[in-house]
Length: 298
Image 1: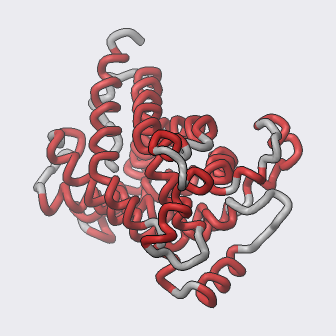
Image 2 (image 1 turned 180 degrees about the vertical axis):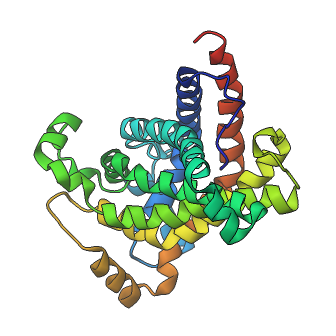
């Protein structure tokens, strides 16, 4: 999704507050869908209409509707820390990476791809670098996933005790995370830029209308999720295991191919794609509305 670029008049504090609030609002609405996707990706058995409810709702499968819905909000605290940090980083990071690339390597990109394609490649490359840097937030992501699909791994321990006892264990799967984020973020910002450039004929991305950003964001997000889906599934299975159970990504890939087949790499893709449109419209609109609002006061 194209981050809010603006005209440069919005302060850094306003961007942090606006994008952070956007992340919180997005989290409260879309966290259940993320839980469903993670549980589907972590499921190693065949999915059918009869088994779908136990897979999604776990112990709450036979309980009232309200209890079922609440069961889709595990790890909300960890998810809040991760999502807010991620939104602030992603909304603010990509434009800065793009500025650095444009300042130092614009000539190389233009000579290699041409002026128009070079501009899109710079956007995509900046997005890819931003995605790779997200690995620093991996511990929060790992704790969120464990709480969503494997709460037994906590065994009554609080977050501080887990950080003290587990240490680098929380970075398990960092290589697969970077491998997922690099092409995923490249596709996210690249497809968005291509859509604006060739479909919507937008010359200055920062002046795109709400509708143009909406269309470009959907194209970018669908491309990103689809490209990153296989590596995201492997990453999720590495992270949802118990802390003491170390499993390599290669082992996960071999087991998936052996027992579940190639389609297992795309488990959870449907609910992700189905929520892409409203999720991006919501978070983008909130961020774009709140950043100028906060800039009046900070």
